[in-house]
Length: 266
Image (cartoon, rainbow, N blue to C red):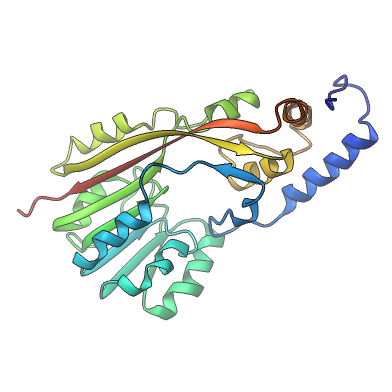
């Protein structure tokens, strides 16, 4: 039996218990772009490629590395044995920046506060890095071109701007970057000297096993539903709980892309 009641009816005892659970999830801390808390609460299909494996394959040929939007440095640390002599990272989100400095600076990594957004300038000199990597952080392709050394490589995995569009639609809103697609990225690259070596798009599914897990996710990724709180979106959460009990899970479409480019030697 579903949980739906008239929107103006007081919540039942069971709904009140669910609401308390959802508010606990809403208040859980999140930092470092680490979703391990959801490991047994969701299923996120993975792309057909491995970003980390591709970075691992590129690192032995690099003497300098820039990781855009490193988060708390989690993935970079997993590759520590392959780091080149110079490693720099950017991060703009204050809690992640603090983590990155705590974890990476003692290891000799240059940690720079920078949003690394689509139109921002990078605080590095021209032709500085043999390898620039970026997982799910914005990038200005013209700045990437500038800081890449001749013959250097840029590898990025990105979330498509229409990722989880059906989740946003369930909350009667739209993702803010629906224009950000592989085609858009390739159009920007075409305005540079960079040579495309790889460009793939991927479609998959993300499944949430509880509305509480969805609440945690929406607080961690606030642009999916701008201004989300349990209180303001309670009627929709109750509808989703009803759907969960009918279907056994909440399933939404996810979309990713990976692009690799090389700067010509001269």
